[in-house]
Length: 142
Image 1: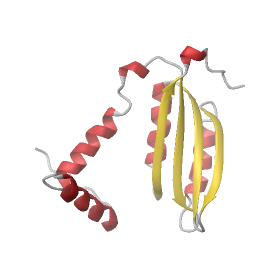
Image 2 (image 1 turned 135 degrees about the horizontal axis):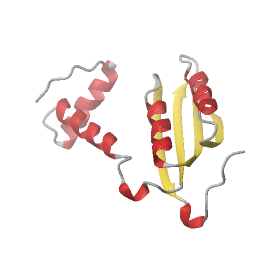
Image 3 (image 1 turned 120 degrees about the vertical axis):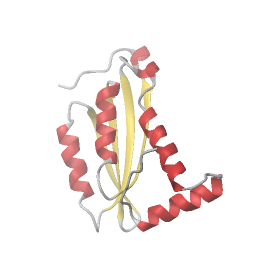
């Protein structure tokens, strides 16, 4: 098996180790392999290919210590043909939530979610995808 070195914050390493202990994994490498398989398989659902989809992506970040908000707005503009709606809200005293509603095909949605996940300093990224072609075609952006 190939050995891969990965840098991550100590807090995340501690969470991975605790998760491994709590769920019976043999160690952090097994947790990372399992998480990697899950991440890579998320958008490989053949039932979603070549279909009109809607997705909701929710991002939580600390607005006082990062420039995540600026990066989210950059992605919104870069993907204006995919982003049907965008909502920003404050969460507590130091955090923000950015919610994106996407309309498009699996490949474009997957790329967008990947770019959100790759954004440094996000605290949480959650999303859901559902086919909407049975309700009629997705309206194309003007």
